[in-house]
Length: 113
Length: 114
Figure (spheres, rainbow over the protein chains, first blue to last red):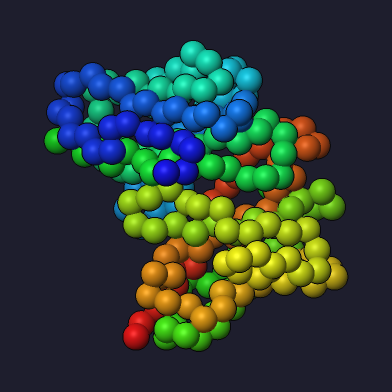
């Protein structure tokens, strides 16, 4: 357990479904992140929340919708996904400013059928 | 954010020392160098971080020359369980503004065999 908990660990959804990924941290961090990792590709930064405010949205399709209700929780709402969205979705947290690095969760393995 | 270059893959045997070198020619004065380890289907895990000279912890050492344009992660006496992807990243942790953002490259796939 890393201190960042992601649920569910695995998710299979159809293209017309709506689902949400959840991330929770109790490390006292005030920044949270969503990354996407497709097979044999580098991690891609999707969204950054700093002090509960979205500060970065890296040209992510609108079928991905993040939500950060407080500094400990982060959600990624999914709707009408495509098969190419199948990937490992990783949540991370850190201090807004600090060179201590990120703490990652174990990820959600998403399969879109 | 400074770009990093590291070998795509490395092979080793159990009990050997493994050194993975990363180039970061455009590293900025305020940047730290951080290494992460990632196992399949898991999130990356922080290994070690340094600014200059040598840093050692219970799992690895990090060597940084005076010009800081490269760094070497040293894993002593590797075992099969050290088979993973190792990422080298540089960044200032948002200390000079711009947010604490990390950009991952392709990393180095280390394979340890018996």
